[in-house]
Length: 456
Image (tube, rainbow, N blue to C red; front, side, top):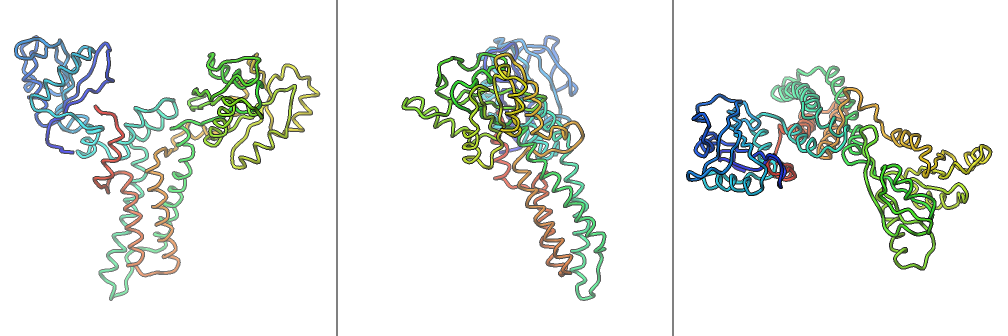
């Protein structure tokens, strides 16, 4: 990607809307738009101050294309660090494309996915982890995912990593200095202080690595499969959780022939519920396919809700599911609790450990179920200033950095020579630098920013 030419793209979603924003960035952005813009007050854009908005018309060979508002952001005080102009026009797809085509003819080129943010990174407006947080913020669809992206975009994670890297770099410099005086057999780096630093870095890295389990759940949601025999109320439970008639409910066993999925947010955490076909022996070809898909969905689910009918409880079926999926979390739930007396409830609690009771038809026990689901997620970490990792690339780099730090610690305990420890220290610094972009490659940048939307 060139960083010296002028780029243009639609910054708002394509399609019809009240307004659309067309973004232009580059050294000639002001003059390019100025040549097409006719201010209602006769102003020249190139003569105006940064961070100002101007009303006028976009003209094409004397023909008015649209009445627009033009916002000016002069570099380096702009999103990309370059001159940036944003044209707010009416949201007609025809108008949008006509203005973009006009800018392309006048010397702009179409921006690649994420190129505006890439330029912001290359021009030092943000580091790489902050740039990635921009994409996460755009994609966030729950309060928790939004909070993580905002915290990372504001540099919380970056500052933590940068501080560790600087402290390690200071000691690395002293270790490297010892190599220059290897004949004199002197130590510039205090080994006790160095060991304390390594222990502290290890603790921080482990804490960040452990947070990935929560961050990944928040970012992608928790897939929950609702399974059980036919006609136990799986579809009714899904409809109650979603508060809409999403799945067909019928007294006829085997109504659900395929999986039905939808997502809800409970206290900022996304849960993706999957209503599956009832598990039973059947000769129906279509129903058999649905049951096969049920088992496919169970494989991908993080949690299995196994639903019983309170009038036909068969714990053997639950045991079969547990045997088939020994590593899965399985939550047994007894539906139609309104048909049970207290004695029967106590008996079932003894027969089936950790069972929950509800009535999907009457909505009883749903709040208790939601609370239990939230209990599976360490949502308490979201309420403080705890840094949470949700990016798999960061997770991988942290694992590699911790591995190198452990090697340095072992070398320190074994009193290895400075030159051998210096190799592992450099590798740890490299992996930490990968996170913030202190160390990058063209392939890495291309892979990261290709996943952005065009216009950002």
